[in-house]
Amino acid sequence: MYVGKLVFSQVMDHLPMHTFRRCVSRYKGEHYVKKFGCLDQYLSMAFAQMTHRESLRDIEACLLAHQSKLYHMGFRSIRVSRNTLSKANELRDWRIYADFAQALIRIARPLYAHEDLGLDLDNTVYALDASTVDLCLSVFPWALFRSTKSAVKLHTLLDLRGNIPAFIHLSDGKMHDVNVLDILLPEAGAIYIMDRGYVDFERLFTMHCAGAFFVIRAKSNTKFERRYSHAADKSAGVRCDQTIMLTGVDTARSYPQPLRRIKYYDENTDKTFNFLTNNFNIPAQTVADLYRHRWQVELFFKWIKQHLRIKSFFGTSENAVKAQIWIAISVYVLVAIIRKRLNLDTDLYTILQILSLTLFEKMPLDQLLINRAYTTDETDMPNQLNLFDILTGQ
Image (tube, rainbow, N blue to C red; front, side, top):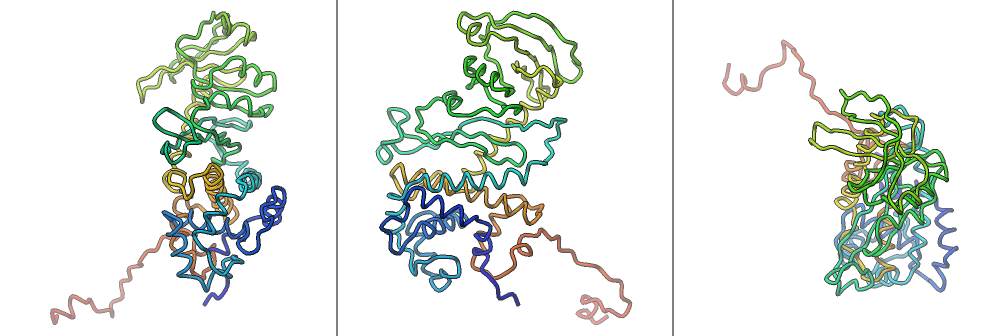
């Protein structure tokens, strides 16, 4: 019989606690705090994320039911009160958990650096997009979006090798997607995949000058002139591969260098796409395949909204909302780290589902999460009676 740590404690053992303490110290998170420390707050919120708790009262009730196990789970407070947790979310700087999530991301990305994208590329490939979390205007008046509602926007740069978010910026709903390019520091040699919402040739030229590549879907009103046409294999969907120069009044000045335009027809959707890129070395088909991989960032947003608590919040202040979102992201990255460290084939959704039901169990984590296929071996033993024969008297 296994008499070791609780499953929750084994999960939290993968956290770099020295880094967490540095984040707390950096923002003086435990200044004048006597009992309920930042670690207690993080463990409570992480527990809520992994077990799909609905409210502060729900968190309090569940932890109170296992009060004798709190110390073994890592808590230093003998009781988790909803009022105490609410005040902690309200007052403790959300940047503590933002920095800690970024530290976990730096641990996770090298673990997935050699994942196969199915493309003959050595470059790091990112997908950039944003997603909006709708909020009630009367409850969240600080998150301005429209005249009738509020919203928080998650600007995310997803590393497609492992689907790990390399960069996340939280803003109110009014911030346009393209403005995040002013905050993002381009990585030389990396490929950034973006939708039409990020078409701003002055910002794209800044990315080009930094040595980064981009693949972006062109707008229908983009003015250009063709300089050269390259040979294209039209049997695979590529209709043309051209070198162009922008001729618009502002765009020609904003992006004075040649661009590559690829027209691609997708038979599955019966749609034609026009892509622009500053990479002239990769095949035209690879450019189209790269843009198809952009869908991974959409799946990332869908996944965290469905399986983590970032659509209903335990607090209404800006600090509480941002702290909850960053803790949710850190839980996502932590599960990804555990999956790689334990060399699991199980997907993240299944791991979270298993953990949600077994956090208070005492079982080795690797044995718990290994995906076994249980089968029953049929034996043809002549001396083994058939149950049906026994019941019928034959």
